[in-house]
Amino acid sequence: MSRFLSVVGLFLFAAGGAACPPEDDEIEVKVLSILASELSKKVEPKLSEFAKQAQKKDASLTGFRLDRATSEKLKLGETKKFPVAGDEVVEVTINKERNEKGRIVLTIKPPKLAQITYECVCDKYFSMATQHYEGKGKDREQLFIAVMAKPCVSKK
Image (spheres, rainbow, N blue to C red):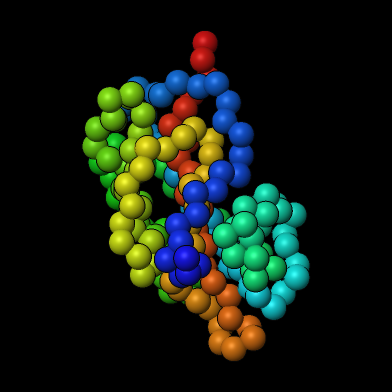
């Protein structure tokens, strides 16, 4: 399957034991803009696990760099646009109601792709390849985004 249309569910960090916060709490949302290249061989240390998982889907990607990391606090029902590579944005909505398990559900609208709705897993990133590219020719890099919501609070 073409890497252009593949959605890569990669999880970069281990989840800890946690519970969902009360509904009026703010939810911290982090969005990473990651650029992957077929030419570069350099992988930023923070992205080593991400690179391994992405290369399982597309072995031609050999270089990975963090372009931008943005963090914002949102309330249930709120939508925010997060800047990523170039002039592109990722729109993230914290859905108004929790699902039947009491977990936060996010809706993400990445550049040049249809929106995706998923149940967030505490302290784990959900990532995907997009169809957006920066640069031309040998310098071309594909944009990946990774989104994490921190709706968890420590158990007491």
